[in-house]
Image: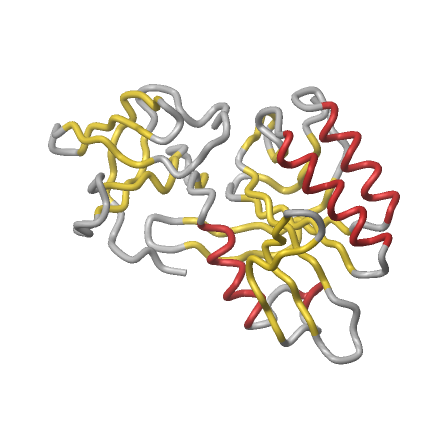
Length: 237
């Protein structure tokens, strides 16, 4: 998926109120960008960090820039927009580019299920059990090569794990899909020291039959491309 408008480089001044970031453009102009990420963004929001912003001229938007990437200035990038994974994955699922889910021909986003919940994607096909897919964006890395989730305590994530476990018990396919928005990681772990309750819920859901799929991405200031599968390992922090 290509960005709608070419990204421009900037330096982060500060991130605040979760969804706002003050930045300095290459010409020295200071702007405020929308930060579409409610998480802690641990390790990604240090003042002076090189970042990439997406400009827009949409009169309906209050801010003229959206923060899309962190540039680690070593050839690697991290995507910080948590709304992006579902857009990228919808296209990949429709085009059957995720091997583990390639047998499904119908992709429905944001489907209600259970008690007052929505699943990111419901996949269906004749002769196959329905597949309920919950997507999580992974951006944390505290150890070289290792991506981790979550980056902060997530009661919502724990609720999702419990919901998926119930779906699996009912005989459907229940899938937790970690999309790793980093280009410098080769495997994924659960950050049990950050949120022990989430780690326990993930272990219990796995025992109940929930599948975990980890997918890499290729990121650049031009586009985001779905990559291949990554290994889910044990937390080693």
